[in-house]
Length: 118
Image (cartoon, rainbow, N blue to C red; front, side):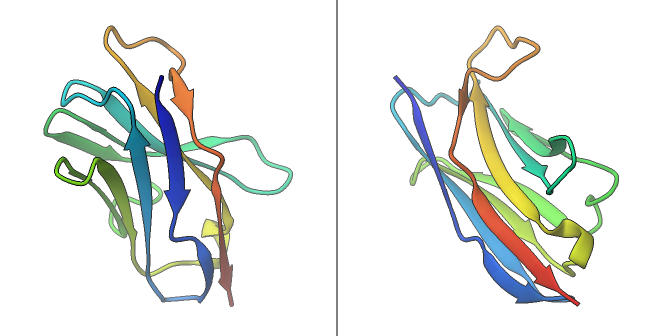
């Protein structure tokens, strides 16, 4: 069984930075894809970034400001967020999918709140 625990959320002013961490316990291989998603109040959940093997990809809305990375030694996947904007305010979730990858991720964390004040 895999468990994901997000941390690092909080309140930050616009233009500031935060680093979110997703701690993975249980089976976690380099072939697993780990994604970050977010959900703002009244909106649908949206994709933010994904890491699989050594490949990374960020959504267009954040690709110039956010970066995803994996720390294999610590079993974490981090989301570095810079130049934060009020519209980045959301609950951020990490998710993990073992291969073969499906449409949905296999495991989800509980989320961490990020609030960006203007």
